[in-house]
Image 1: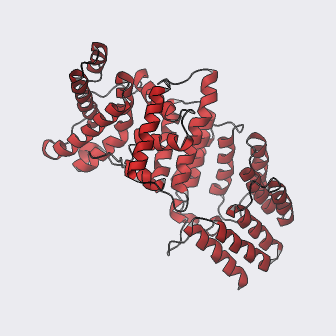
Image 2: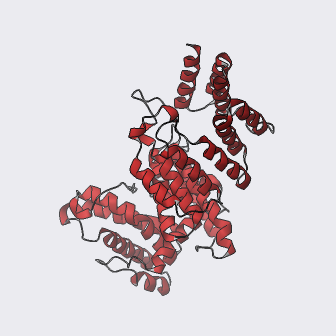
Image 3: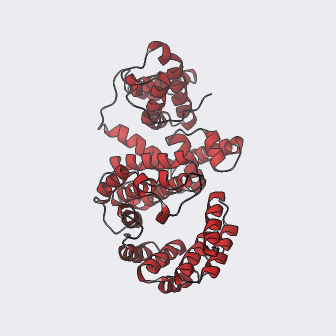
Length: 416
C-alpha cells in the first residue's frame, strides 16, 4: 500500500490533484490518525485507514476534481473505512457510534474545537513517551505524525525497511502492552513530560540539519514545533525551540559552496540567509523567558543570525548567554561551545583554558568538534602548524564525509 509523504502545496483548488493530495496529507494526516486512534484504540487501523484515504484521493481527484474541503473529504473516507473494518470485526457499538459522530463530509471541524486539539497533542505525547527508547520515539513521530514513509526513515537510521517496520511495530505494541495512556499530561506531569517531547523534536531537527542528514526531517521538526507552539501557547520553551529552529534553518541555502562543500559560519554569504525566517524567529523569541535551555540557545543563535558580518558578531553577548546555559543545562558540549565563545570574546588563551576544563572528564575525547575547536583557537593564537595537525586529527575522527572535507580544507589553508 502506498504511504503518504506530505509536501507543501498551495490552496487545493489551485493546484494539480496530486499536489493537492500531498498538501492535504501534510495538513490533515496526523489529525486523522490521532482522531481514529482515540476512537478505535488501534494504531495500525488508524494509519491504514488514513493511508487508504490518501490512495483514494490520488485515484479519484484527477477525475472528480479536488473537493472544496480536502481535509474533511479525507477524514470522511478514513472514518468510513474504519467503520467498515470495525463492523466486520463486530466491535462494540460504542466505537461505531463515536465514529459516526465524527465530522461529516464537506465540513471541516471548527478550528478551535477542543477535541481536535487534544487529539493531536495526545498523539505527540504518546509517540514521545519516555517508556519508549529515544530512537523509537523519533521513528514513531516521523511515521505516525509526519507520515514519512518507512523506507525513508529506515534510510536515515541506516537500517533496512523491514528492520524499521519491526521497530515501529514493537514500539506500538509496547504502547498497547504497557497501557501507555493516550492523553496529554496535566499539572506537574506536563512540566515533567514536555522536555522529553522537545528533546525528540530537537533530535529530529538535528537529523535533518546535520551535514549529511535528511533535510525533510528538519522541515518536519519545524512544522511540529509550530504545531506545539500553536496548541500550547504560553509555553516559553516550545517557543524557544521553534525560534532556535528558525534561526538555524535560515542558513540552509548558504551552508555549501558551489562544489557542495560545507562552509563555516564566518564564510557564508549572508545575503543568501532566509531573512524572513530570521524575522519570524525574533518575533517568536520575544515571547520567551531566558530561563530554559532552548530559549537560551535561541538567544545565542539570534546573535549569529542578526550579525551583519562575522566581524560584527556580538561574542560578548554570546559568551554571557553560554554562561547562563551552562548553569541551566550543563553538558560537555555546552562547555565546549562556551569555551569557543569566550575564546572569541576574550581571546584564544581564555578559550583554550576553558576548553581544557571542558575536556577534563574525558567525555570529549575523540570528539571531532572538540578537536576542531582547539584547532581554531590554536590558529588564532598564531600556531598554524599545530592547528593544521589538529584539524587533520578532527577529520580522521569524523564520520561525516562533508565535515571531513571541510576540516581537511582548513588544515590545507593553514599550510599555505
